[in-house]
Amino acid sequence: MRQGTIFLLGLIFLLLLAAPVNDTTMQLAEEDNGINNSRDFSTSYTSHATISINGDAAFASAGFPGYGNSTHPYIIEGYFIESSSECIRIQSTTVYYVIRDCYISSPSFSANYGIILLSAPNGAVEDTYIENHDTGMVSRLSNPTTVVNVTVVGAASRGIYFWDSDNSVVNNSNLISCDIGIDSFSSVNSVIFNNTVIDSISRGISASSSTDSMILNNSINTSWDYGIYVASSDGTCIAYNTVTDCIEMQCIRIANSENIELFGNYVEMNEISLENSPNAIIENNTVINSGFFITGSGLTNWLHSVSGNTVNGLQFGYFNNTSNLEIDLAQYGQLIFANCSNITAKDGAFSNTGCGVEVGYCDNVTIRNITIIDAYDRGLHGVFGYLSDFCTIDDVTIGNYTNGVSCFYCDNATITQSTFLDNYNGIKIENSEDYEVSGNEVNSCENDGIYLDTATNATVIGNQVYDTNDYAFNIFTVSESNITGNF
Image: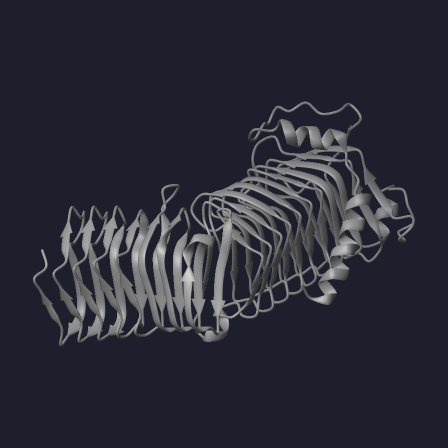
């Protein structure tokens, strides 16, 4: 773990101890099972028209208490505001202000923001409930902004949105049935911690172009796509989050981001993936009913510092820059090889991993007498090979994956005497030369039994392919090859 992160984590945990909790807001979040337009609210709220503040002087002229400094900010507090337009808009200010203990709603669904802070730094939104708006609240060009104990329900776009708002914080908040729960875009040093996100559509928490951010100790349950999505955000720390039940995509996806720190997360039912994201630290993560997936064009994207992780209760086997090794599979829940040579992995079984074995930038890797079955949910690849030569897959059984075996740019590969059952595609090979596919049984594929694209000097003989919904053999741009004796 990097030294700066250790200090920041200590600071965050101190903040966690001091984080306020509003019983009314928390009760509303816990009781909510969807969007409820007829919710009762506390009589302590005072009905109020929409609020628009433009410039520092507008706070005092509107009669809001405070002096606009850090110890006595202007306070907008205790209001019930119901409008199909923006309920609270603050813009072009420099003073300190707090929106506290408000209830923001609309008579019917509104395409507007509930709260918008535009070029209005030094603001805070606390203990507030927002519903029936396209985006619950947005902070744009308003750094820093602090959001504490805010609940947003049913936002068709984003629950809480930081946009060009550096050094902003969202803590102890609840996002329910939003398309994206919390979104940080182009907001450096964002801190997103101790939040709960339930039933999101696209992403539970998203950070894009938000370098050096922290996503810490959040709970994300049931996202149709991604639980946590990080893109183009170098130096981001993702730690101690619980992410479960991501239906279509990854629980944690990291793309095009360098120097990521990923540790202490609990992930269940979909994988942790890194794509084109070099030099990550991956420590002490727990993955259940899935695994890790690492890929990218360029060797550096496969090379990381990895330790202490488990997949389905067994050690995550990540090997890089290793040669002349025979692997005992009994202790591993998944294997990834990066820049390795002369490796043999044999005699074992993997179950319910997103990808059983990955091989990238390797040569002479042999995978023999292994069973890889995803009985829980259809995984992506049973075995995945990328830019790896002279590799062998022999006497392997793979079932219920999108691709039983996928090989891209893998010359001189051998796939032989193996069985592929109930996959979408049985064997898929692209942009590879001088390989052999022989003596395999491919059964009950939803799409293609054997798919070959862009190959020279391939040998495909003696394979049995049956009960496929599309093509037994789907072959494109294959030259100088021997494809005979298959049925």
